[in-house]
Image 1 (cartoon, rainbow, N blue to C red):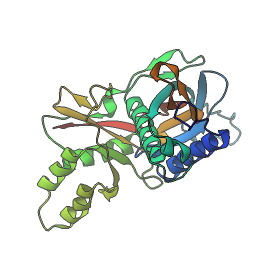
Image 2 (cartoon, rainbow, N blue to C red):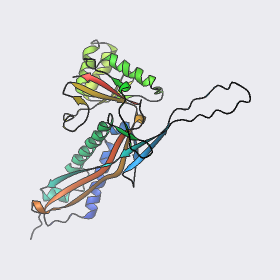
Image 3 (cartoon, rainbow, N blue to C red):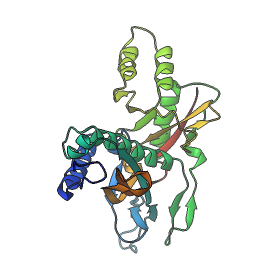
Image 4 (cartoon, one colour):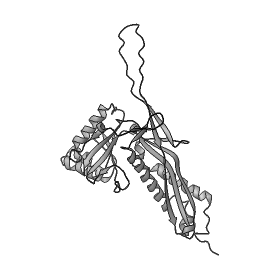
Length: 301
């Protein structure tokens, strides 16, 4: 009797090899946002603490033998919560299943793309969401209104980029040490192209962004980020289809935490005539790490 999808038993080492191939591919080509945030690995509790210390200020000594003035910097705790994410795909070809361990197998790239997209979704959702702070993580920290560059009824412009850069400096972000990033769609790139003069050096700097490349302009690293399902996914990048919330940030301002890397299993689906199913799951979360290092730049679309 010949083997079928239902009778074929996928060797465990093939499953492990497939998982390793997906993880390796994900490390080589992660999500667009994932490579521009700080990261950490967590175990145990559902929420883990992200600690940082506020600025330290030196005081002028006024008398020779005066008492020491102790500076007490702000100790802030940010909590990050991990959620579980799953996906499943059915395999309907025995020859494909037998070669599942091959690095070039089409399912490797499918799982990589899906995981990378979800990583970006997790980060995007956290840009302007309520952050958790306090000793026990029960203090809600809303996104500060002062860090919003209002749309003013206008599209993306050089003036808005100047305003964002100014706000970062007012927030004491040292732009000599780090380059701010901004996630934009094709609409914002087109608006910039329409504003700068054709043939100018500014135009030549903006034009490569059209090709979907991460590029620099006015001291910002632009991250082309398209998500047509932003509204249905609950990602706060679009309001009523008219205003886009473009996140502006420095890597130290956002944090991505992983409780469990991608784990893959392959087994039979009894409810689908025992056809083989590839199931993947991982646990992760994200949060703003420090206020003032993430801005909201509103643009009319």
